Amino acid sequence: MNTVFSLKDFVFLLAGLKWTILLSAIAFTGGGIVGLIVAVARTAQSAWLRRVMIFYIGVFQGTPLLMQLFVVYYGLGLIGIQVPAWAAVTLAFTLNASAFLGDIWRGAIQALPRGQTEAATALGLPMVSRLRDVILPQALRIAQPATVGYAVQLIKGTSLAAIVGFIELARAGQIVSNQIFAPILVFGVVGAIYFVLCWPLSFYSARLEAKFAASR
Amino acid sequence: MGYTLDFSVVWDHMPALLWGCLGTLGLALAGMSLALVIGIFGVFARGSHIAWLRRLVIAFIEITRNTPFLVQIFFLYFALPSLGLKLNPTVTAIIALGINGGAYSIEIIRGGVQSIHKGQVEAGLALGLHKGEVFRLIVLKPALRAIYPSLTGQFIMLTLTSSICTSIAAYELTSVAQRIDSDTFRSFEVYFTVTLMYLAISWMLMSAFALISRQYFNYPTR
Image (cartoon, rainbow over the protein chains, first blue to last red):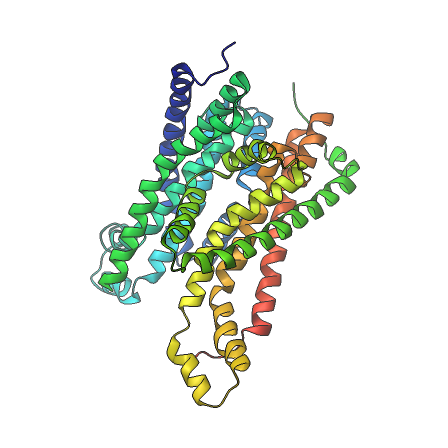
């Protein structure tokens, strides 16, 4: 057994990093698609549709991400759907991301002047075109800083997949740490890798925010 | 082979789960208190004339906010003993939550302090208010009001984040749930119930914070 942090261990961590990035990317894309529907439904005319979405967002924002992972992970098996761990984990993160992104974009849609919707309606644009051509392009632009900021939360959040045994960066770190008995060094390196991944996004988000603040 | 849901297992362990809820609240409360202390000292250090101290605080904020809490708690769990601090997991969890929440609190509190303009203090003094009154009514209360929503939101986030402390077996709701799960194999029932408990906790906290806000900060700004 080796007791030094070797290149082989680092490569193992990088293999974990690959899954962290993949998981984040899929959850961000899937969560973005579902989140658009959530945001539109949350700002819809129909009161019951709005209420359903308030509840949907409230549940995901009011419970720990770890519990959401557990409930989806064990719940899927319960209703007879046998899926591999990575699929259950991906679904849980996608649902979570849809609620958070949906709420961010809800805020952006509501921040637009009412006149935008009214003018689009007065021009006779059907709902789909009103959203696609008028409302969403502007709302998503306003929401850019928060959206990028959420990507950081999502990447950090995927580390919880380690607790259900999915081998991403954090779990890979645990495995290496157990093998070479150097937890401080290994988790330091793992933290540094997360930092290299997240910090540029945080920086970009802050810059976007400063840019929008200045243009106002 | 069909699986029938059986919540009686959960019911049998209800006392343990309710104690777990208290454990979670205690952990969050202790973590948030530490976070506020770090936050207040951090604001002073962040605005210090000593350049290296300022840079240190900025580095602390950036590192903490750009790494996962799970990695932070593992790091501390192993790093603290090597500094000669042999602590039980629950105390380690409080420190981890305090450090994590502290990094966010510095920025929140700093925003509140910056929201008070110097002119307001001067105006208060010019109107003949005592220094104490100026601090209490013109600096502290409006600053608290400005940061109240972010800070209470931060507290609820910290409460939910505390579930991750199960990974070092600190005493809180999720670790209680994991123990019941490994004894009974009723995973879904246990975690579903516990999820509802967290939901109840965060909704109660939200209502309580809204009530306090209406009591104390219910005055017009202009």
